[in-house]
Image (cartoon, one colour):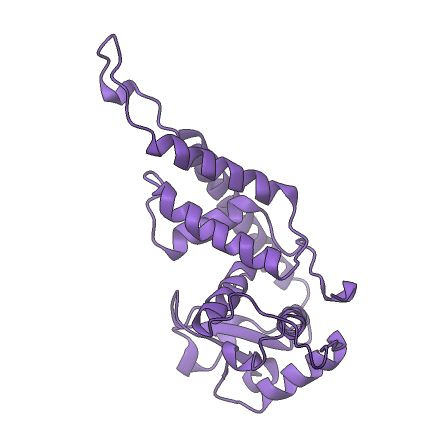
Length: 249
């Protein structure tokens, strides 16, 4: 695949962010994590990223190994202790991971509050000529989930591949689809702009060709980064829609 199609995981914040994303998405109790479920979902995201040849940092793979190790420990039969200690004194294999997630969540919440305060203070001195915030989205979609993360985007792609049974996208033997990223960005933007009521994310992937899927996904990320389009989702697991920023101003 063309080197320019690869996405560096600078956009991704880290494996703990992915775990917190899954915990929120599946409404999991952080104090009682179902390891088998969270490991399965985590590995599905990792496999999707690897399949798209994303430049996954080693820390993601280390976390994958950690989750698999915890899962294995949880599956081991409980041995009777010779001194008949109560079960409450038995160490929970999830304990360390749970504490890491709780501390990291606190750190993120504090960082977000500080960022909000900084933004509020900046507004007292300067006012950019045009600032689009999700609160400015038309009323008909104000109840939708607009805080879309990179993990939501990867999840949408993962679900699209499942729905279309493209678990193994292939390159056509007839013609290789090496599309310049700039060209695909223009095509995606035009497609989104022509659908004022929102373009279903899946509609951008009519071809199972791996190159086409990857370059389209990167094009969407670049357009979102450039604030030319934005993504909206009613709620977790439902279809994701793309809108043009121009339609919202």
